[in-house]
Image (cartoon, rainbow, N blue to C red; front, side):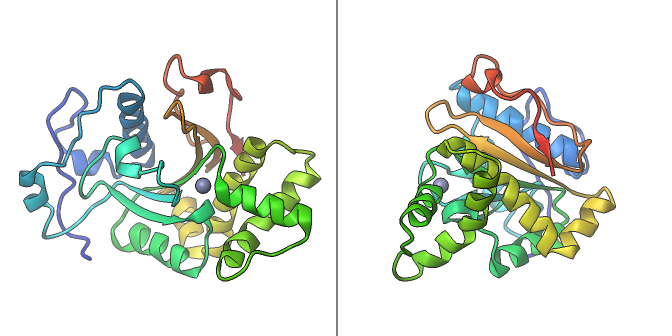
Amino acid sequence: MSHTGSVGGQPGPQRTTDRASALSEPTLAYAELVAGNRRFVGGTPRHPNQDAGHRAAVADGQHPFAVIVGCSDSRLAAEIIFDRGLGDLFVVRTAGHTAGPEVLGSVEYAVTVLGTPLVVVLGHDSCGAVQAARESAATGTAPSGHLRAVVDAVLPSLRRAQAEGVEDIDGIVDIHIAQTVETLLGQSPVLADEVAQGRCAVVGVSYRLAAGAVRPVAVVPADFATLDTPAGSPESTGPAAPATV
Ligand SMILES: [Zn+2]
């Protein structure tokens, strides 16, 4: 992997003359993700940066504008739901977007070596990993094999939900997304310092499988500006503001 190279991109109404520079800003990087998600939700994707010419252009280096720490769920493909292409997103996925050492190291690589200005935790409704953890907690039985590691990583979010009186699965998912944001920052002083210096932001978003839209549920720093969710989506009637953690 290399930190050299350019972001590139297809011409469009929002294209800037210095795209790499513009997308080095956390707020602009987040706006680009939201714009892509709106295209995906609206059925008007542009599929940017997926052509052979761009493939060749980024072969010598990468400059992704966002890290996605997402659930491995097969319906949560980052480049599709954010309508992006090669070289745009640095994607780390585990079942239940758990944040173990390899995930933390991958995030730190993107943020410090590649200079990526935004980390997005991507969770979703009806998450199987969260459901498995809830079942494990309810029955007092641990799953076999390495699946136990996934469940164990989600259990702190279950306990937090119980303490807050949240019982519905999607409410628990939101808490788990916020918990993952906190874990990333709490376990990675490197990432926390990048955020403190204003070079990076961390946003937790919840994705709706049927609607295809994302909704912010946690933001760091607290004054980081997130945008409205796509017009007409079910999320537009959801919580008015994301929690800050
Ligand atoms: Zn999931």
